[in-house]
Image (tube, rainbow over all chains, first blue to last red; front, side, top):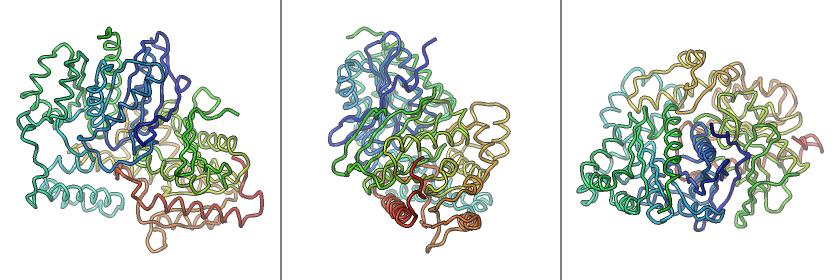
Amino acid sequence: MPEVVTSRQEKPVFFPAGDDMLFGVVTEPVGDTRGVAVILLYGGGYTMSSYYNQYWTRMARRVAAQGFHALRFDHHGNGDSTGRVDEFDHRAPFSDDMEAAMRFMETQGVRRFLVVGDCLGARGALVAASHIEEVDGVFMISAMVRDGRMDKADDWAREYGLGHYLRRAFRWKTVSKLANRDMRRAYMKVASSKLKSAAPKVRGASGGRRAPQDQDNGGASTRFLGPLEIVLGRGANVHFVFGADDEQRSAEFEMARAASLGRILGAAETQVEINVVPGTIANIQDVTAQDAIIDLVSDWVGRVGDRPEH
Amino acid sequence: MRSADSRRIDQEAGIVEDAEFFGSGAERLFGLRYLPASGSPLAGVVMCGPILAQFRAHYRNGTLVARALAARGVAVQRFHYRGMGNSDGDVSNLDLSSMHEDAAAAGARLTEMIGSVPIAYFGVNVGAYPAAVASRPGQMLVLDSPPPNGRHYFRNAVRAHAVYAMQRENKENLTTEDLLEQLRGGSRDVALLGCRLSLGLYETMVATSLVEEVGDSSRPILMIGLGEEGSLRPEGERMRSELVERGFPVEVAVRDKVDPFWYVENSAPEDQPEIAVTAERITDWVQRQISEVPSGRTGDSA
């Protein structure tokens, strides 16, 4: 049974990333030290500290109990870091911040890395891993294979058609809840996002169209496939995990797998793992899914972290 | 006196940020302290944040308000309750009593680090409850969007959860009665918007109200709440009236936007005027309390 790790093994840190100072918490390993740091990055719209149920805190302490260093941190413009973020965009998935986090851990004497990212953070972890050879593995939680803006309201609005919301809007149960200010506000928020997302179609704009090369790739972005090919080509391990109820995210992955992604994964079969946990992990995670992912990460770093240097 | 674990100096903003774990017990708290670079704060503010999904929704706003207060000469202590964020402890043990203890510990840490200056407790949403209990006679109390009572709080939380479930086409129609039944059934997996909830938290919350938590001891109060044209909405007005009836000097600041709501709203809260407005209102009110109240009455320790 691994030792229980608490704040006694932890140290809050500020470290530079470009013009910004990022905030993070370093967890020191207990027992036999592996000499590998696990770097953790959340997805767009969240923060490291306020994520559900001490999710990243528990994950960091769990891997530290297995002998790994851990660093969880806030990307720029969020949480307790400096800077600002105007939108969450897969074309700029905070990979520079992820690289800065690894450089910081090098100053702490750690030279090899495993990176774990959730959603947009998964893409940031992947891109950073493609730039830094000392990364032995990438664990991607609910990664999107396509590019897009990541905003919760937009996600909800995208998920269902306008008719779905109009039908619901006129139900008595919905109307009766409009007496409550909080409910009114929630409805307005979704309606506003839905209208915004519908607007380009009304205007006939092409903002929603994917690049031709993405269509050839079964919808997957070259910004996803390129870094993945580099990381796997270097011999690193990659783990994907999806929520069983996150049908859209899984469907997009499977569609991409039928095209170029399948070829890339097939060529690196033994390095790749794909898992599904019950419930949802995109947007608001089920609590059982949260626990299942921490278990999976713990199991994965335990195996991959023992891999000899390549 | 133990110094902070990590420090950031922001010369442009004129503030210093200290991050640390503190507390002498088995379970330590994580905290961030924001200090004016001048080194002599006019007052100290203990910010008691919200919990559950509002912890997440409010987090960046809390950071920015704390920095804005420090830039105006007010020292701020933020912290994560045990069982939340980076602090030790398990969420299953988080209840109103543990939140009270944590708020008091944060106040003590701030006083230890900045010395004898007037102290205000600043409670955001349900954080107003531990702020009210931890603040001592004569200390200042800022209540930002407090729920009138625990039942009201959970009713809104369940509604927010229902809206989310509706988005996901989830047929689950959770009610507060269902929630209570699940909690009493002993499940560890009872959650609202992805955040685990304990029976202890539910029971301690629904048994009380904001006015009860404030109690009877004399404190000046700044109440920030929803409203229009300078008047609070009815539920806020009722809380204000009850506090005034109990003899509290209550000043009101009205805004037309909920903070925090249950979902993350804006990826760049730096653009929200409410951040600077809130910091300005609190600083102005604290300064007036200090200048109006005879020496010693604003409470110079936590």
